Length: 362
Image 1 (spheres, one colour):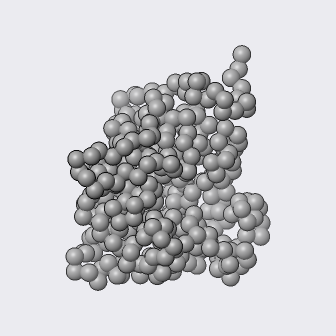
Image 2 (cartoon, helix red, strand yellow):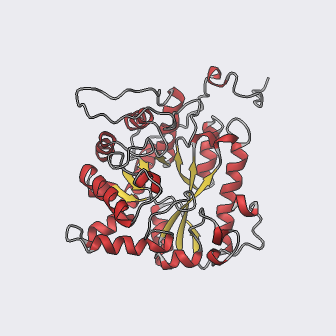
Image 3 (cartoon, rainbow, N blue to C red):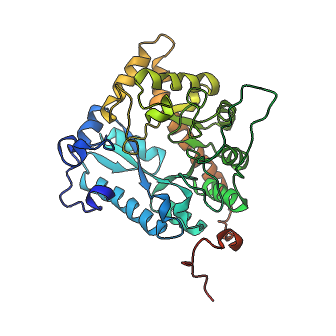
């Protein structure tokens, strides 16, 4: 929306974008109200995404503008969309025949290295933060540039070339626990994944990642982490981007199902979900071209005797609702314990040479 109409929504028709330029000819456009209804979508995370190039510049302002446009989109379509910030609100929206619209902030660079900004995002309705995007932050390492961690020799431990979460990064995770905000590890390095799993007291999510065993990309999740996420009570939501499904430019619905089955096998049925990544990817699998195709995926799985209706319910959203509810429970316990917000600042050495655009006061 920012790219094509600069968030100018006066003439924006969200009902049928597949017949409107520039969306109908774009490989990056998979969502509109018509296709959401056809896809029987009950709840949707909208990504307040800001490119990594904005880090140390205007990332905070741009993120606020993207949160604003998500809220305006829902306000423009009150008969179809409803902003939701709790598990109860998701259920209430569904009962009212609305698509529950949740806000996710993608990339820790959007915080401007400020816990106060994190709290403001939560106050504005954001319910997950992806710790990194395609860039390291001063306090968390991303998957880009990470050495391949797969090895065929069990006696050799994979090399670790990333340092994971700094002290400040661990404070971010703890503050998210206190707020009731889901910690999202998609895009993170394995060391960052491990550090977050060791620090958090609430279940974690991978909002759009697949299985590294099936596609050896650093954007996917190794089996060792799948097992740790299961122990944590979290969820891995399968990405549909073909390069993360087959490590190639083509994939189909069955290839996606293989990732779902693998995560189910390694982590368990309670820890797999759907995190397609539509509108953030430009190559989709055959049979899963846009948000209208979700029923085809679920119907194909249900035709397999190994899958029950309860399994499908968990995959389609039940597991995510469980995780979100557990995150809310941790928040409520910390409130009862009167755990105060952290006001610690990131150490300035992390920022030296990064920018001249900081005012520290006098």
